[in-house]
Image (cartoon, rainbow, N blue to C red; front, side, top):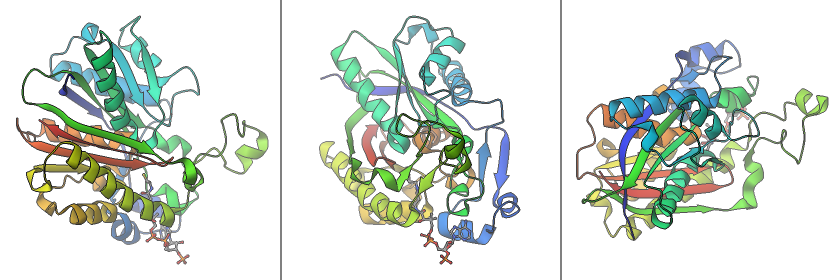
Length: 326
Ligand code: COA
């Protein structure tokens, strides 16, 4: 079995920043409520002419340039997103076109906030079972495009952004020591976009009822997020044959600071080893983990040999976790 490793990272957050105070002018909320309940202070919002692939293209270019990766050496593009440019073709197609990487296979993964970890798992499988050597895995969203800006219980939580990583076979100690993904469709209605697909195609009525936006039962999702992120992390830790004391960095999905703190406490990972950027990004869904990885990588926080745990949970429900030796 080949072990894969990350050889480069990139990310892009749109220029426009929306603060909690800005939101308090739109809906009945406050900076204090949002900060206390979620840890979020601000989020980035894509412009009206920016689609998810546009963010992905910038993230990928940054990765290629910084880590000296030739786009022509990439054998496949995988994009984890639930806010595709169009329902079809895939968002990866637009990344391929913009970066001039013709003929390689490209596709999207719909696993919500777990999309990037699902992408890593699929890339791992492809490198192990095909002649593909290098794969670009992206994750991220323009959730602002499917946000109901009059629903204070959801509109304060999300932000836009895309991150990415290039993976290939590792020939040294570094690489993915474990990867675990899973899903349970029984609670799909707790977090979803009800219309726009084949179940509820777009009509005047679906638009009027705002059924093309995020619908969420926050309290229920919260409980499942805490339990499932703990379970997924434990599984990845045991599959990697390490103990939680070995972890140098815990990089959890950035959905809510209380979910992050509770998961870290349960895993007995001290606060100083937990990476948090939710105050600046909010929940970027599939973007959350790769954006965090890239910010840490660029800031020199990740040292060769460090043991890292990434852990995500999202709509579906889906989940995924991986232990990586950097
Ligand atoms: N500003 C002010 N008040 C708000 C508010 C806001 N933005 N959003 C909700 N409220 C109100 C509610 O209306 C409710 O008022 P009521 O008691 O008068 O009915 C009160 O705050 C408490 O609401 P509740 O939903 O119980 O708050 P909470 O502490 O559970 O926090 C979430 C709500 C959404 C922050 C929290 O449930 C959460 O983070 N859930 C997980 C969401 C998530 O991570 N989703 C993505 C998973 S990948």
